[in-house]
Length: 326
Ligand code: NAI
Ligand code: MG
Image (tube, rainbow, N blue to C red; front, side, top):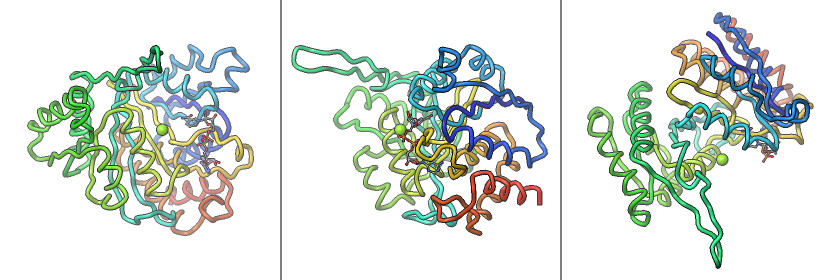
Protein backbone atom coordinates (compact mmCIF):
# COMPACT_ATOMS: atom_id res chain seq x y z
CA UNK A 1 0.00 0.00 0.00
CA UNK A 2 1.51 3.29 -1.18
CA UNK A 3 0.31 6.48 0.49
CA UNK A 4 1.32 10.01 -0.48
CA UNK A 5 1.51 12.29 2.56
CA UNK A 6 1.18 16.06 2.16
CA UNK A 7 1.28 17.75 5.60
CA UNK A 8 1.15 21.31 4.19
CA UNK A 9 1.04 24.44 6.39
CA UNK A 10 0.22 25.44 9.96
CA UNK A 11 -1.55 22.74 11.95
CA UNK A 12 -1.47 20.55 8.83
CA UNK A 13 1.87 19.12 9.90
CA UNK A 14 0.74 18.59 13.50
CA UNK A 15 -2.48 16.75 12.68
CA UNK A 16 -0.66 14.76 10.00
CA UNK A 17 1.94 13.59 12.54
CA UNK A 18 -0.97 12.53 14.76
CA UNK A 19 -2.62 10.62 11.91
CA UNK A 20 0.65 8.86 11.08
CA UNK A 21 1.05 7.86 14.74
CA UNK A 22 -2.39 6.26 14.58
CA UNK A 23 -1.74 4.65 11.17
CA UNK A 24 1.51 3.24 12.50
CA UNK A 25 -0.35 1.43 15.27
CA UNK A 26 -2.07 -0.76 12.67
CA UNK A 27 -0.12 -3.61 11.12
CA UNK A 28 -0.32 -2.26 7.58
CA UNK A 29 3.23 -1.05 7.01
CA UNK A 30 2.27 1.29 4.19
CA UNK A 31 4.95 2.85 2.03
CA UNK A 32 4.74 6.59 2.74
CA UNK A 33 5.76 9.10 0.08
CA UNK A 34 6.24 12.49 1.76
CA UNK A 35 5.33 15.41 -0.48
CA UNK A 36 5.37 19.18 -0.29
CA UNK A 37 2.60 21.72 -0.93
CA UNK A 38 1.25 25.03 0.37
CA UNK A 39 2.51 28.45 1.44
CA UNK A 40 5.84 27.34 2.96
CA UNK A 41 6.46 25.25 -0.11
CA UNK A 42 5.75 28.28 -2.32
CA UNK A 43 8.26 30.32 -0.36
CA UNK A 44 10.92 27.64 -0.56
CA UNK A 45 10.41 26.39 -4.11
CA UNK A 46 8.49 29.10 -5.98
CA UNK A 47 5.37 26.96 -6.43
CA UNK A 48 2.68 25.82 -3.96
CA UNK A 49 2.31 22.50 -5.79
CA UNK A 50 5.56 21.10 -7.26
CA UNK A 51 5.58 18.48 -10.02
CA UNK A 52 7.10 15.93 -7.63
CA UNK A 53 3.99 16.26 -5.47
CA UNK A 54 1.72 15.64 -8.44
CA UNK A 55 3.83 12.58 -9.29
CA UNK A 56 3.57 11.31 -5.71
CA UNK A 57 -0.22 11.64 -5.71
CA UNK A 58 -0.37 10.02 -9.15
CA UNK A 59 1.58 6.93 -8.16
CA UNK A 60 0.07 6.48 -4.68
CA UNK A 61 -2.94 4.30 -3.92
CA UNK A 62 -4.29 7.22 -1.91
CA UNK A 63 -3.17 10.57 -0.53
CA UNK A 64 -3.44 12.15 2.90
CA UNK A 65 -3.53 15.95 2.84
CA UNK A 66 -3.23 18.09 5.99
CA UNK A 67 -4.02 21.70 5.14
CA UNK A 68 -2.59 24.55 3.12
CA UNK A 69 -2.70 28.23 4.05
CA UNK A 70 -3.47 31.07 1.64
CA UNK A 71 -2.56 28.89 -1.33
CA UNK A 72 -5.19 26.28 -0.37
CA UNK A 73 -7.50 27.11 -3.23
CA UNK A 74 -4.67 26.74 -5.75
CA UNK A 75 -3.40 23.53 -4.22
CA UNK A 76 -6.56 21.56 -3.57
CA UNK A 77 -8.50 22.87 -6.56
CA UNK A 78 -5.59 22.00 -8.83
CA UNK A 79 -5.28 18.54 -7.30
CA UNK A 80 -9.01 17.92 -7.75
CA UNK A 81 -8.81 19.00 -11.38
CA UNK A 82 -5.54 17.26 -12.23
CA UNK A 83 -6.73 13.90 -10.89
CA UNK A 84 -10.40 14.17 -11.82
CA UNK A 85 -11.56 13.91 -8.20
CA UNK A 86 -15.22 14.31 -9.04
CA UNK A 87 -16.77 13.18 -5.78
CA UNK A 88 -16.48 15.02 -2.49
CA UNK A 89 -17.57 12.83 0.37
CA UNK A 90 -18.44 14.28 3.76
CA UNK A 91 -19.54 11.87 6.48
CA UNK A 92 -21.72 13.49 9.14
CA UNK A 93 -21.48 11.41 12.26
CA UNK A 94 -21.95 12.29 15.92
CA UNK A 95 -19.08 11.39 18.21
CA UNK A 96 -19.15 10.66 21.95
CA UNK A 97 -17.88 13.48 24.14
CA UNK A 98 -18.16 16.04 21.35
CA UNK A 99 -20.76 18.70 21.95
CA UNK A 100 -23.31 18.63 19.16
CA UNK A 101 -26.98 19.22 18.41
CA UNK A 102 -27.83 15.53 17.99
CA UNK A 103 -25.91 12.68 19.63
CA UNK A 104 -26.90 10.00 17.12
CA UNK A 105 -26.50 11.29 13.58
CA UNK A 106 -24.94 9.21 10.85
CA UNK A 107 -25.35 10.25 7.25
CA UNK A 108 -23.16 11.18 4.31
CA UNK A 109 -23.14 14.07 1.86
CA UNK A 110 -21.88 13.34 -1.65
CA UNK A 111 -21.07 16.55 -3.49
CA UNK A 112 -20.33 16.86 -7.21
CA UNK A 113 -16.89 18.40 -7.36
CA UNK A 114 -16.22 19.52 -10.94
CA UNK A 115 -18.94 21.73 -12.37
CA UNK A 116 -21.94 23.92 -11.44
CA UNK A 117 -21.27 27.60 -10.68
CA UNK A 118 -17.80 26.64 -9.49
CA UNK A 119 -16.49 26.33 -13.04
CA UNK A 120 -15.85 30.01 -12.29
CA UNK A 121 -17.03 31.26 -15.66
CA UNK A 122 -17.99 34.80 -14.69
CA UNK A 123 -17.96 37.97 -16.70
CA UNK A 124 -18.76 41.59 -16.14
CA UNK A 125 -21.70 43.08 -17.97
CA UNK A 126 -22.63 46.71 -18.45
CA UNK A 127 -24.44 46.83 -15.12
CA UNK A 128 -22.97 43.98 -13.08
CA UNK A 129 -21.75 40.48 -13.78
CA UNK A 130 -23.05 37.03 -14.79
CA UNK A 131 -21.88 33.53 -13.87
CA UNK A 132 -22.49 30.38 -15.91
CA UNK A 133 -23.91 27.35 -14.17
CA UNK A 134 -22.77 24.18 -15.91
CA UNK A 135 -24.60 20.90 -15.25
CA UNK A 136 -23.87 18.03 -17.63
CA UNK A 137 -25.64 14.69 -17.91
CA UNK A 138 -22.30 12.89 -17.78
CA UNK A 139 -21.10 14.49 -14.54
CA UNK A 140 -24.56 14.19 -12.97
CA UNK A 141 -24.77 10.51 -13.84
CA UNK A 142 -21.25 9.86 -12.53
CA UNK A 143 -21.90 11.49 -9.15
CA UNK A 144 -25.36 9.95 -8.72
CA UNK A 145 -24.00 6.50 -9.56
CA UNK A 146 -21.19 7.08 -7.06
CA UNK A 147 -23.77 7.95 -4.39
CA UNK A 148 -25.85 4.83 -5.04
CA UNK A 149 -22.77 2.59 -5.15
CA UNK A 150 -21.63 4.15 -1.88
CA UNK A 151 -25.06 3.53 -0.36
CA UNK A 152 -24.97 -0.13 -1.39
CA UNK A 153 -21.35 -0.61 -0.23
CA UNK A 154 -22.00 1.10 3.09
CA UNK A 155 -25.29 -0.70 3.75
CA UNK A 156 -27.38 2.45 3.58
CA UNK A 157 -31.03 2.34 2.67
CA UNK A 158 -31.69 5.60 0.89
CA UNK A 159 -30.31 8.32 -1.34
CA UNK A 160 -31.78 11.83 -1.43
CA UNK A 161 -31.11 14.18 -4.34
CA UNK A 162 -30.96 17.84 -3.34
CA UNK A 163 -31.59 20.50 -5.99
CA UNK A 164 -33.62 23.57 -6.88
CA UNK A 165 -35.28 22.27 -10.04
CA UNK A 166 -38.42 24.36 -9.50
CA UNK A 167 -36.40 27.50 -10.28
CA UNK A 168 -33.34 26.18 -12.10
CA UNK A 169 -35.54 24.17 -14.44
CA UNK A 170 -32.91 23.25 -17.01
CA UNK A 171 -29.73 22.72 -14.98
CA UNK A 172 -31.22 21.14 -11.88
CA UNK A 173 -33.99 19.68 -14.03
CA UNK A 174 -31.33 17.55 -15.71
CA UNK A 175 -29.74 16.66 -12.38
CA UNK A 176 -33.07 15.44 -10.98
CA UNK A 177 -33.96 13.57 -14.16
CA UNK A 178 -30.61 11.76 -14.26
CA UNK A 179 -30.97 10.98 -10.55
CA UNK A 180 -34.19 9.02 -11.09
CA UNK A 181 -32.81 7.32 -14.22
CA UNK A 182 -29.85 6.01 -12.24
CA UNK A 183 -32.03 5.23 -9.21
CA UNK A 184 -34.10 2.82 -11.28
CA UNK A 185 -31.13 0.45 -11.53
CA UNK A 186 -30.82 0.37 -7.71
CA UNK A 187 -34.27 -0.92 -6.70
CA UNK A 188 -32.97 -1.99 -3.27
CA UNK A 189 -32.10 1.63 -2.38
CA UNK A 190 -34.85 4.11 -1.65
CA UNK A 191 -34.67 7.29 -3.75
CA UNK A 192 -36.25 10.65 -3.06
CA UNK A 193 -35.52 14.31 -3.66
CA UNK A 194 -35.81 17.60 -1.79
CA UNK A 195 -35.35 21.25 -2.62
CA UNK A 196 -32.15 22.71 -1.25
CA UNK A 197 -33.85 25.39 0.85
CA UNK A 198 -36.08 22.82 2.54
CA UNK A 199 -33.03 20.63 3.08
CA UNK A 200 -31.22 23.47 4.81
CA UNK A 201 -34.11 23.52 7.30
CA UNK A 202 -34.54 19.74 7.60
CA UNK A 203 -30.85 19.35 8.42
CA UNK A 204 -31.61 21.27 11.62
CA UNK A 205 -35.14 20.06 12.35
CA UNK A 206 -35.15 16.42 11.21
CA UNK A 207 -31.62 15.36 10.21
CA UNK A 208 -32.32 11.71 11.05
CA UNK A 209 -34.27 11.52 7.77
CA UNK A 210 -31.05 11.53 5.80
CA UNK A 211 -28.88 8.59 4.85
CA UNK A 212 -26.98 9.60 1.71
CA UNK A 213 -27.46 13.06 0.21
CA UNK A 214 -26.26 13.66 -3.35
CA UNK A 215 -26.13 17.18 -4.68
CA UNK A 216 -24.51 19.64 -7.05
CA UNK A 217 -21.28 21.46 -6.25
CA UNK A 218 -22.36 24.70 -4.58
CA UNK A 219 -25.34 23.31 -2.68
CA UNK A 220 -23.03 20.55 -1.44
CA UNK A 221 -20.43 23.06 -0.33
CA UNK A 222 -22.96 24.97 1.76
CA UNK A 223 -24.96 22.03 3.13
CA UNK A 224 -21.86 20.09 4.14
CA UNK A 225 -20.61 22.95 6.31
CA UNK A 226 -24.06 23.25 7.87
CA UNK A 227 -24.07 19.51 8.51
CA UNK A 228 -20.55 19.61 10.00
CA UNK A 229 -21.84 22.11 12.55
CA UNK A 230 -24.53 19.59 13.59
CA UNK A 231 -21.90 17.15 14.81
CA UNK A 232 -19.21 19.32 16.37
CA UNK A 233 -17.65 21.47 13.68
CA UNK A 234 -14.28 21.85 12.01
CA UNK A 235 -12.03 20.02 14.43
CA UNK A 236 -13.88 16.75 13.87
CA UNK A 237 -15.04 16.92 10.21
CA UNK A 238 -13.27 14.60 7.73
CA UNK A 239 -13.62 14.53 3.94
CA UNK A 240 -12.59 12.64 0.84
CA UNK A 241 -12.05 13.69 -2.77
CA UNK A 242 -12.46 10.64 -4.96
CA UNK A 243 -11.81 10.03 -8.66
CA UNK A 244 -11.66 6.99 -10.94
CA UNK A 245 -7.99 6.31 -10.13
CA UNK A 246 -6.90 8.60 -7.30
CA UNK A 247 -8.29 9.82 -4.01
CA UNK A 248 -7.26 12.45 -1.50
CA UNK A 249 -8.38 12.44 2.13
CA UNK A 250 -8.29 15.65 4.16
CA UNK A 251 -9.83 17.35 7.17
CA UNK A 252 -12.36 20.05 6.31
CA UNK A 253 -10.44 22.61 8.37
CA UNK A 254 -7.57 24.77 7.15
CA UNK A 255 -4.11 25.58 8.50
CA UNK A 256 -5.46 27.49 11.57
CA UNK A 257 -2.44 29.81 11.89
CA UNK A 258 -3.62 31.22 15.27
CA UNK A 259 -3.17 27.86 16.97
CA UNK A 260 -0.34 26.44 14.83
CA UNK A 261 2.87 25.39 16.56
CA UNK A 262 1.19 25.09 19.97
CA UNK A 263 0.42 21.37 19.87
CA UNK A 264 -3.27 22.06 20.64
CA UNK A 265 -4.90 21.34 17.26
CA UNK A 266 -7.57 18.67 17.40
CA UNK A 267 -6.33 15.71 15.32
CA UNK A 268 -9.78 14.07 15.09
CA UNK A 269 -10.71 15.33 11.61
CA UNK A 270 -7.38 14.19 10.15
CA UNK A 271 -7.59 10.83 11.91
CA UNK A 272 -11.16 10.26 10.69
CA UNK A 273 -9.96 11.19 7.19
CA UNK A 274 -7.33 8.48 7.55
CA UNK A 275 -10.03 5.98 8.52
CA UNK A 276 -12.04 7.04 5.46
CA UNK A 277 -8.95 6.38 3.35
CA UNK A 278 -8.56 2.88 4.74
CA UNK A 279 -12.20 2.14 4.05
CA UNK A 280 -11.67 3.34 0.48
CA UNK A 281 -8.61 1.09 0.19
CA UNK A 282 -10.77 -1.88 1.20
CA UNK A 283 -9.41 -2.07 4.73
CA UNK A 284 -12.72 -1.67 6.58
CA UNK A 285 -11.56 -3.56 9.67
CA UNK A 286 -8.58 -1.25 10.14
CA UNK A 287 -10.83 1.76 9.58
CA UNK A 288 -13.18 0.41 12.23
CA UNK A 289 -10.30 -0.06 14.66
CA UNK A 290 -9.40 3.61 14.30
CA UNK A 291 -13.03 4.66 14.73
CA UNK A 292 -13.45 2.61 17.91
CA UNK A 293 -10.13 3.66 19.46
CA UNK A 294 -10.92 7.30 18.70
CA UNK A 295 -14.41 7.03 20.21
CA UNK A 296 -13.06 5.44 23.38
CA UNK A 297 -10.47 8.19 23.68
CA UNK A 298 -13.17 10.84 23.21
CA UNK A 299 -15.45 9.14 25.73
CA UNK A 300 -12.64 9.21 28.29
CA UNK A 301 -12.06 12.92 27.75
CA UNK A 302 -8.48 12.34 26.63
CA UNK A 303 -8.78 15.22 24.19
CA UNK A 304 -7.38 18.55 23.06
CA UNK A 305 -8.47 21.89 24.66
CA UNK A 306 -11.12 22.67 22.00
CA UNK A 307 -13.04 19.63 23.27
CA UNK A 308 -12.50 20.56 26.90
CA UNK A 309 -9.45 18.39 27.57
CA UNK A 310 -5.85 19.20 28.35
CA UNK A 311 -3.97 16.84 26.05
CA UNK A 312 -1.63 17.91 23.30
CA UNK A 313 -2.26 16.92 19.69
CA UNK A 314 0.51 14.32 19.92
CA UNK A 315 -0.68 12.96 23.28
CA UNK A 316 -4.22 12.46 22.03
CA UNK A 317 -2.84 10.59 19.01
CA UNK A 318 -0.77 8.35 21.29
CA UNK A 319 -3.86 7.56 23.42
CA UNK A 320 -5.67 6.44 20.26
CA UNK A 321 -2.67 4.45 19.02
CA UNK A 322 -2.33 2.73 22.41
CA UNK A 323 -5.96 1.59 22.21
CA UNK A 324 -5.45 0.22 18.73
CA UNK A 325 -2.37 -1.71 19.80
CA UNK A 326 -4.46 -3.07 22.70
P1 NAI B 1 -9.43 27.19 9.62
O1 NAI B 1 -10.18 25.94 9.39
O2 NAI B 1 -7.95 27.10 9.49
O3 NAI B 1 -9.78 27.77 11.08
C1 NAI B 1 -11.08 28.18 11.45
C2 NAI B 1 -11.23 28.16 12.97
O4 NAI B 1 -11.30 26.81 13.44
C3 NAI B 1 -10.06 28.77 13.71
O5 NAI B 1 -10.54 29.39 14.87
C4 NAI B 1 -9.20 27.58 14.07
O6 NAI B 1 -8.40 27.81 15.18
C5 NAI B 1 -10.25 26.50 14.32
N1 NAI B 1 -9.75 25.17 13.97
C6 NAI B 1 -9.59 24.68 12.71
N2 NAI B 1 -9.11 23.44 12.76
C7 NAI B 1 -8.96 23.12 14.05
C8 NAI B 1 -8.50 21.96 14.74
N3 NAI B 1 -8.07 20.87 14.09
N4 NAI B 1 -8.46 21.98 16.09
C9 NAI B 1 -8.88 23.06 16.77
N5 NAI B 1 -9.35 24.18 16.17
C10 NAI B 1 -9.38 24.21 14.83
O7 NAI B 1 -10.01 28.27 8.59
P2 NAI B 1 -9.58 29.80 8.34
O8 NAI B 1 -9.16 30.43 9.62
O9 NAI B 1 -10.68 30.37 7.58
O10 NAI B 1 -8.32 29.71 7.36
C11 NAI B 1 -6.97 29.65 7.81
C12 NAI B 1 -6.10 29.31 6.62
O11 NAI B 1 -6.41 27.98 6.17
C13 NAI B 1 -6.30 30.24 5.42
O12 NAI B 1 -5.04 30.52 4.88
C14 NAI B 1 -7.13 29.40 4.46
O13 NAI B 1 -6.84 29.71 3.10
C15 NAI B 1 -6.66 27.99 4.78
N6 NAI B 1 -7.67 26.93 4.50
C16 NAI B 1 -7.20 25.77 3.93
C17 NAI B 1 -8.05 24.73 3.67
C18 NAI B 1 -7.46 23.50 3.07
O14 NAI B 1 -6.25 23.34 3.07
N7 NAI B 1 -8.28 22.57 2.59
C19 NAI B 1 -9.49 24.80 3.98
C20 NAI B 1 -9.88 26.03 4.64
C21 NAI B 1 -8.99 27.06 4.87
MG1 MG C 1 -16.51 24.92 2.05
